[in-house]
Image (cartoon, each protein chain N blue to C red):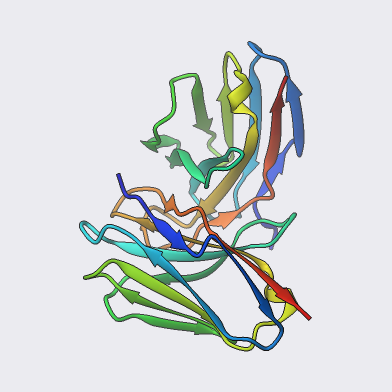
Length: 111
Length: 114
């Protein structure tokens, strides 16, 4: 069982705030860690895929880091905007397996 | 480029009936995944098909089944529907079976069992 835990469950910030979420997972047999953004009434959208310990990825104001030895990943959003409001999902898999998702962190950004 | 498509958008069935959900992957993608999101739960992995073969199966009963056609589209069948099968069913596709490939999701089918 590849339980993936995400915290916090939900988060409310003001426009311009920076924020971060945590994804923790069993570090054994690790292969890849995925982050997705899921906006209401839309499909989940892939943000990052990371495979190596120490990986850092960035897309605009959003970045992510990976620690496979201790089993966690952080997602950072700099200068949150209302359009960042969504549920952020992380998921991991072993080689040759499908994704196991966490329950997500729901971010709400007020203007 | 067209994304992953799913049909129908909504499906209402009664207990004991069968439901068939359909998914068309992105052109060139050979892997299709099915996930279920029931109320209060995260996305749960159901089935994975690649090149017409079932590659992996989640912790769901055998009444959840599916197949992948030669054009890589896929069907998910749920037999003997139960009330707890009411959920959003998402299909995703990827280019091959490498675990680090991104999965691209469709808009989902909302199944309601009454």
